Image (tube, rainbow, N blue to C red):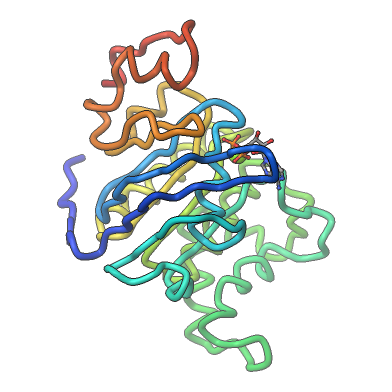
Length: 251
Ligand SMILES: Nc1ncnc2c1ncn2[C@@H]1O[C@H](COP(=O)(O)OP(=O)(O)O)[C@@H](O)[C@H]1O
Ligand SMILES: [Mg+2]
C-alpha cells in the first residue's frame, strides 16, 4: 500500500558527538546522525552494540556526553513529546496492573496522577487498545498475557501518550505473527502521520525490509541513512562480524 509520508525536515532529531561510558566500558563512541520524521527508522547491531544505551542516552536515562536536539532544542527539555517502550525483559511483570491500568498510565503526563482521568483520556485509551486488538483483555492482569499481547498493550500505552517521537526497544522479540503484523501496521501509520518512529532490533531477519532508514551500530556508528544505502555487505560485516548472511531481498 503506498503511503504519503510527511517529511517535515524541521522535526528531526540530531545526535551530535554522543558518547556513553559505563565505568571502563565505552558503550558508545562519538555517534553522529539524524533521525527523520515520517520514516520508520531501525537501530540495528549485535548484542552489546549499544542500541538500548543509545535510546536511554537520548532520553536522559543514562548519562552521556554530546548533544541530542529535537527541532533544534535539547530533546531532554521536551520529553513530554516522547513515548518510550523499554525491552520487555526490563519491565516488572509481577506489578499488579491490568491492561487498562497499563494503558491509562500513558495518559498520566497529560492529566496528572491526582486528577480523575477525563472522558477524553478514557476514549483515547480505548481507541488505542482497539487499534492493537486488545480491548477485550482490558481487565486482565498484564502478567497473565503472552509476550505478543504484552507488547501490543505497551504499544497501546505509547499510542495513548499522543507523542511525536516513538521509541521501541526490541519490540519484535518473542512475539507471534499476528502481533508482528499489527505492530508494523501501527508503525507505518505513525510514520505516515509524520511522527518519528525509532525501533531497536538485533536480528537481521526479513523484517529489516520494513524499515525506511537504518542506524547500524557496534559501539561506533557503522552507517546511517536510507536502508538501501546502509545495507551493504561491508557495513554488515563491520557491524556483525564476518559471517553474516547477506539478505539481498531486504535491500
Ligand atoms: N548499566 C550498565 N552498567 C554497565 N554496563 C552496561 C550497563 N548497561 C549496559 N552495559 C553494557 O554496555 C554495552 C551495551 O549495552 P546495551 O546498550 O544494552 O547493548 P544492546 O542493547 O545493543 O544489546 C554492553 O556491553 C552492556 O553489557
Ligand atoms: Mg538492548
